[in-house]
Image (tube, rainbow, N blue to C red):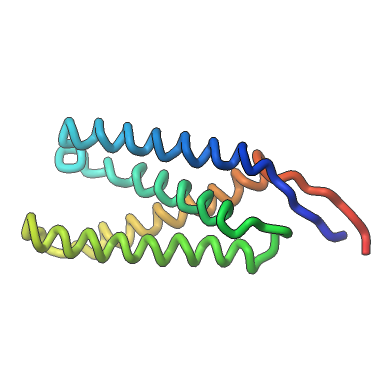
Amino acid sequence: MEYYIHFNKKKLVIRITSLILFISALNFIILKFHWYFSIWWSDMPMHFLGGFWLGLVFIWFLKPKDLSYNFILKIILGVLVISVLWEVFEVLLNRATLQDPFNILDTLSDICFDLGGAFVSIFYFTKRIMIKENFKI
C-alpha cells in the first residue's frame, strides 16, 4: 500500500513560529538569571528544542510527498550538519571570549539532544500535522 502525504502548511508555519518565540523567551530568561552557568543541564532542553525546531523547518523546506527513509534521512542529516556547525561556533566563541577548554562530552551531549529533537519533530509531524491518504497501485 502506498501513501500520499499532504499537510496543512499554515499549521506547520504556526507551530514553527510559536516554537521559535518560545525558545527565544526561554533563552532570554535563562540568560537573565545566568542559568547556563549556574544550572549545568540548562542547555540540554534548549538543544532539544532547537533540534525539534530545526526538524520542523527542514520538513517545511523539503515539502514531503511521501514518508520515506530518504526523507527522514535528509531531515536527520540536515539537523546533524547544523548541530555540528553550531558546536564549532560555540567552541570558537568560548575560546575567543571565555577561554573555556573544549569539553567533548558537552559537545556530544548537545549534538545528541539536537538529534533527539529532530526525531521527535518527525514523530510530531507524522502524528499531528501530516494527513495520509491510502491508494493502491
